[in-house]
Every structure is written in structure tokens, then in C-alpha cells.
Image 1 (cartoon, rainbow, N blue to C red):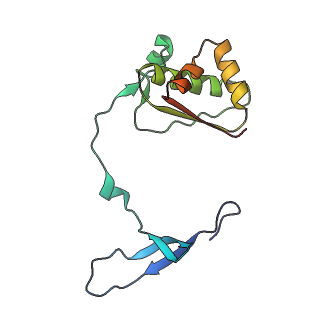
Image 2: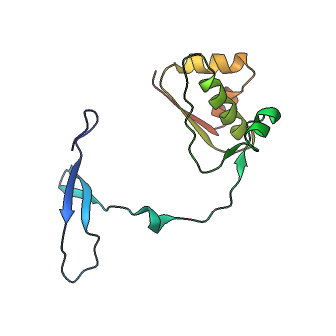
Length: 143
């Protein structure tokens, strides 16, 4: 069960472990110098936290109104569409607004360089560079 990309996925199966509390089933592991490192299987239901639901605004009142106040904090948002439809611009707007509020944000960009991303944002008066310089915005760009 190894993907066609990335490192091989190794796993072991724990069926029985006498006199000790354990989690049965498959667990991933990595071979390291000096031995192996086992990553216990996690169960999402054991890690749920009740959080106050709040919205993260883009800073554009009309757009935030369309979204019912903004994007829900703690969730993931995937922007999908053809080239040139504004996906990077929209993500840049939310990231810059978060940085301006003193919140941390991250952008993962796979189809344009850092120079292009920052230049396009600046042309639209979106201050990504300021957020990066302030340490509030981190960019992960495949240059």
C-alpha cells in the first residue's frame, strides 16, 4: 500500500499485547538509525474539542456578508476553479486580513512564484508582503 509518490508507507499490526493496555490494529512506523519509530494509530473521537465557533472575515464587507460573516475558523476551505478566476486573489485577501488582525495565516501556492504572488497581490492593494515581514503570514510556494 505504497503511494506512487513520497516515502514508502510502512505499517505493523498489533493483535495482542499481554498485561498492557494497547491499541490494536495497524500503526505506521519509520525505520531510523538505531531502530524503528512507531506512530500509534489515532482515533479522531478521542481528540474532539468543543470550541467557540467564530467567523474569519476577508475584510471586504459585501463578500463577508455573502459568506454569513466570513469563513468558519478551524475549518478547511478549498478554492477550486479554472485558471484566472481569482482563487489566489481570494486566498491572499483572507490571509492579509488575518495578518492585519494579528492572527497567523499560511498560504500554500503551487502554480506561481513568490515574486508573482506578491506582485499580483500588491497590484490589488492586498498587503501580503507586510504580513510576511511582520511574521504573521507564512508562505509555502513551489518556486
